Image (cartoon, rainbow, N blue to C red; front, side):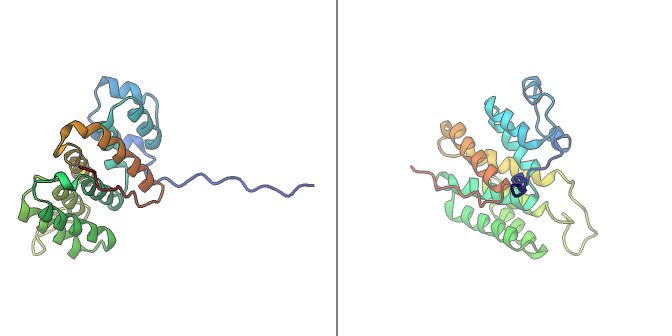
Amino acid sequence: MSAPTTPAKTPANKLSADLARVLPHLQLDGEGQAKIGDCRQSAEALDRLEQAGLLIEATRLVAHALPPREAVWWACACSRHTAGSGANPATEAAIRAAAEEWVRRPTDEHRRAAMTEAEKAGFGSAEAWAAVGAFWSGDSMAPLEAPKVPPQPHFPGLAVAGSVALAAVRGQATRRDARLKQFLTSARDIAAGGAGRLEAEAD
């Protein structure tokens, strides 16, 4: 008698399995809805959107389907990839560092520090919106001394989606689609438990 075989484990995927929760935030038109069809899993819907060339919609799905910390980390990876095309690389690097510090140590202090960096520089960069994503992942958007104002659950995803969209078009916007494809590769790596790191873009 042969030894019993151990069933193969399904690879972990951090993308939310509940596609119905994510769908309202994807801004899909009729074509996009048709491509998703009867999908119930976010990972499958992501594959279909990318195969259809609906890359921005695919990144919105990732932004809302990943847990907030992973989503903010992904936004930072995307912004790092195109950082050389930023308007103020030094300032943007400081904002990204603050957002990444929250990912590593998700305390309220680091969450608020990330938002402070974004506020100081304005909200026009990919890094700033990654930091906003960190801030909106906490339990209150109000100042420390004020009564709590909880963010809506989809707010972190909105900020991350905005961050990734900005990272994709800065500098040479003609690179957008190639960048988005690399961003989605990074997202899948993060969803599988990897770091999702992207090399800095060549000039």
